[in-house]
Length: 116
Image (cartoon, rainbow, N blue to C red; front, side, top):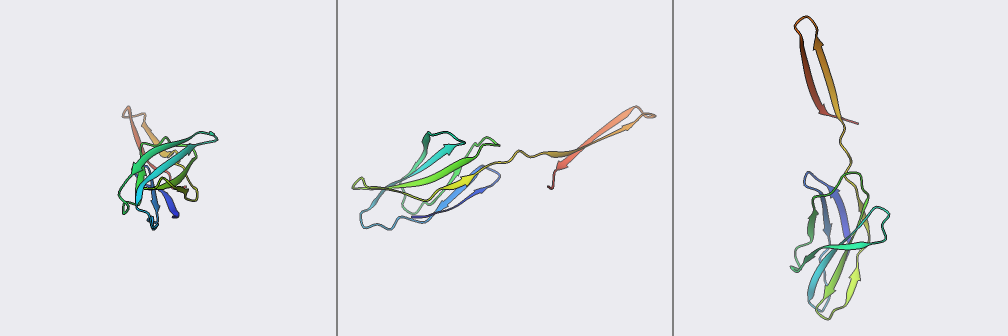
């Protein structure tokens, strides 16, 4: 089994992997996550449908590097780990514009997402 990608989307970090193809039926996919430089790896989901090979990790805090792996467990209790993939939500910096009209005594504020 291969963890194909970890993509950032508007919900969080989407994971996708190849389906289990062993001779012994699948018991579960375990989604594992390690945050930053921590030595702790946590199980964040258990998926029992062999055809369900996607997961969205949400909510995820921006700025932290996340390491993901999928552990497959068959009904005999044997386990295998996928390769590792990284994910990180970036903080979005808006382009902020302020306008002042001293004669009218008004101020305007506008913003848009940064393009860099």
